[in-house]
Length: 391
Image 1: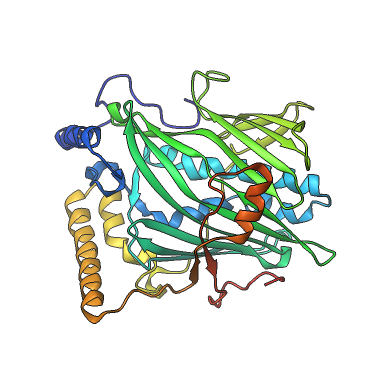
Image 2: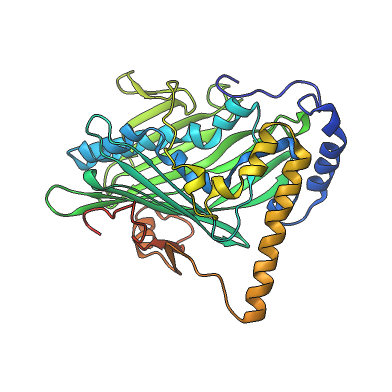
């Protein structure tokens, strides 16, 4: 598999010798487990040094493509620009850890109230992009995020959660949640895009070298009526290549494709009408900029998990496990204290809304399922993250 770690052909070959016993036990546990697999404890060698609260940064690791959405002049061109940006985020979200860490790793499970802040600076007039992330629920784990580029009039608000199960030797992940991209228009109006999330399949478990494939279909529905439909397939389908996709763009009230795209989302895709390159993510991505750890809030991810992350990176799994247990035990005590006092944890940056009216309105346009979803609304109360012009 080009561009991502490929599992070895021998069972367990990707597992360190010292970890083979725990890996075998883990495989047996997930094969017989009934319920949500996220509650299972993974062997240390498969843990990532990165908390799940950092994952929303993957939405904007090509900030130039995000900024370019605002430069499109027509509804059609904006939908194409949004699709191009979205496809270009998939490599960072789903295969970058394979390249950096050798195989897919289980991210650190965030604590309730965990925070992550970052930005991408203004380079070449693209505007500065800001990021705020908060872990708004622990059972089930839900991460809320807000990304904005005020000078370009762009804002992305969303949340994500996962339901996991085991089937046919793979872990199946149903992503729950959605994102709404809002674009301020020159004439004073705004255009909104509903972005749904693909399903995941984690393969390579038998070999100890897990990797992610995307499956089924996701959608990007514009309030102008334009719809992008993205179909994902793995090896053995369209081209026999991993990470393959096909996308079509249809106009308002039509099912006839106006544009067609095809390729692999972790490398290059093409416009099938012109033969020109549509997305190319083989160049280096731009990591999010964060402040010094010593200046961070105690609940910011990189400060909270710093000793655990160091242990994982250095292969000192005993230290990583001990420090991880400290954090988890502290969280359990906080919940017990709250229960005794009759209080609950208060979210810092987001307010929960049982039904998202934007989701409901846009999902109707393509018969999206489910017909309604909840959402977490950013309160524009982080001083380094100004709201967009319309807010």
